Length: 95
Image (cartoon, rainbow, N blue to C red; front, top):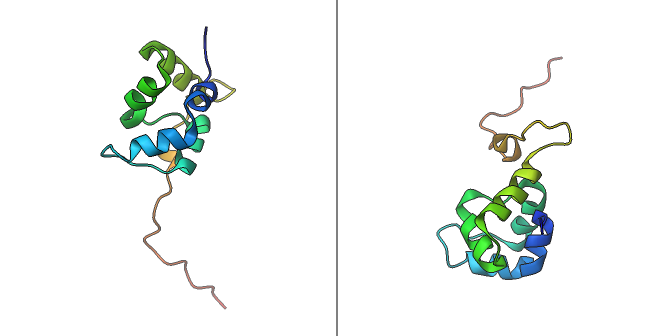
C-alpha cells in the first residue's frame, strides 16, 4: 500500500523523529521535520525516518519523490528552498 510522506512522518510522530535526529550528525527541530512533509526528507535523514517508520526503502523514496514534484511535473530545486544569507546592505535611496 503506497503511503504519502505525510502519512509516513505522522505514523512515527514529528517529535519522535526530531528527538531521534538529536543523536545524529544532523540534528533538527520538530518544526524542521514538519516542513519535510512539504519539501521532502533530506538525504541525511532518509535512513533514520525509514527505520523509525518501518517502511521499505523504495516506499519512502517514492513518497519523497512525489513531494519533490510540483503539480505541473517540474522538480523543485532544493537550492530555492534554502534561506541564503544576505551579504550586502540594501542600496541607499537616491534623492
